[in-house]
Each structure stands twice: as structure tokens, then as C-alpha cells.
Image 1 (cartoon, rainbow, N blue to C red):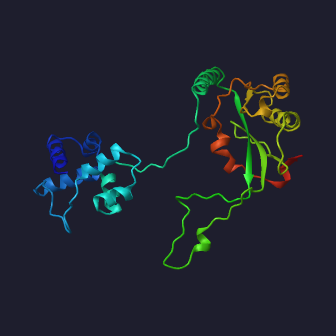
Image 2 (image 1 turned 135 degrees about the vertical axis):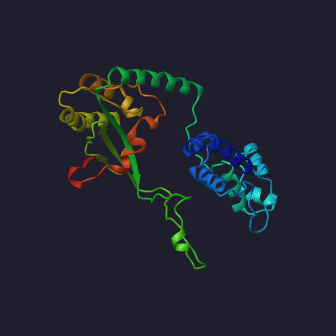
Image 3 (image 1 turned 45 degrees about the horizontal axis):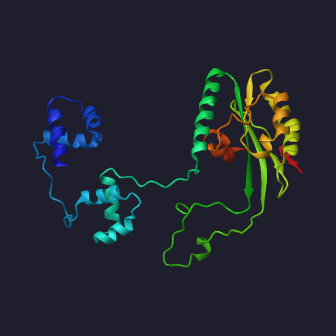
Length: 288
């Protein structure tokens, strides 16, 4: 840090602004301000004496350990170096390290990767050439009675007392579940959700009936005479010949060879809208 303070002092003496120095050296403005204060008070830029026990570890050793093995546990490294986990965490953070949660991604074959690229390019070109259309997204979602919880963030605090009842989240092996169909439009409109009976399996015939009796009237109502395009994923009921033929005759839609496979990131219903759709019992339609 002493070398960094010397760099800051050279730039300050050269007349550079504190904000520009912070951006140039990728440091905080407060660090530049403190160095400026030291120069104004004619203080030395050397490291000041620290209180407590001096540090006995080499910071670069911790950084190199994580660079060699990013999956290395902080607890294991702390035990190996005979230091505390908080010290490992503090040093890693001070050297620019970040603790990132691991995320899931689908296992894609080479053929699927090629298909995703091909269809995504075609979809992007279609969107560019028809920028004023209303995009209508659809998707089915299964809801269960089992509560959702996050093992990382959903915690309980104990002071030695028995919190076993609060620690456990009750789940069942085969939870009761129901499925519903949601449809939303890029102009902010959303169709009343269609609920299915428990254990119902969506067939192409039932899906065609829903398109005809629920989706199409709603689409005509919200779009009036505006241009639109209807989206659906590659579920068997969606890509069946009976559904595709009906859509081709009655609606403007992206056919089954258009939507990229394994692409929940392209459909807002998959990662955003489901949690915000308001369900009013008076508007919910149940399909048998």
C-alpha cells in the first residue's frame, strides 16, 4: 500500500484531480483523499504502526491457492495454514477475490449448441426486422404445496437454545402439485391464468382447445389490429401437428423450429414474471 500512496502523491503533485486519480488507479476516492491529507499535513507516506499481533502470513500464498483451485474451501485452507477462516476471507477480499455462488446450467450436446446458435440468430434477425410487434410469451408452471427455501440464506439464529423445530423445513416425497398456463405480452398485458386439475397431463387436444377458447380471444382483445407474434416452447403438446396446424391458420406465431431449445433466459415467464402475476379467483379458469 505504501507504493500505491507514492503513486497517488506523484499524480497529486502533477495537478491531477482526485476523482481522475481514483479512476486511473482503480482505487477509492477516500484513499486518494487520505493521501492528500497526509501531504497537506507534511506527514510521511510510509505505513503507520499497526496495533495488535503482526500478520504472519503471505497474502500472495492465499491468492495463489485459490487461483490454482477455485473450488478450494476456505475452511480447508485455513486449517492447512493454521489461521482463522475470517483471515482467509479478509485477505482474499482485500486482494480482489469474490465468493461466487455456483449456478446451474443445462448439459447441452454439440448438436443442441449448434441448434441454439442457429435459431437464436434467426430469432434475433426476426426481432430486428419486426421491431414494432407485440411479443406474447407463454409457458406452463407447476406449483407444489412444499415450501421453497434457500439453504444459504434461510437461516435461524440460536443462542444455545433448542431451535430444531425452526431449522427443519417439512417436505413430502410426492408433493401435491397443480399446473397452470400463463400468457403475458410485451405491452404489459397478462392473460388470466388457466389452472389444470391436480395430476392433469397436458395433451395436444387440450392445448388446442385452450388456444382456441382462451388465448386467441384474449390476444384479439389486447392487440386489436396491431402486429403481434405468439411464443411457445418445445413442449410436446405445443409442437404436436394439431396445435401447429391450428396456430398456422389462426395466429401469428413462431413455429416449432424457430424457438431455441433449452432457453429459459429468453422467456420472461421463466425467470421473472411468474412471481409477480396476481391471481384473482374470479378470473381463474380451471381446465379438466
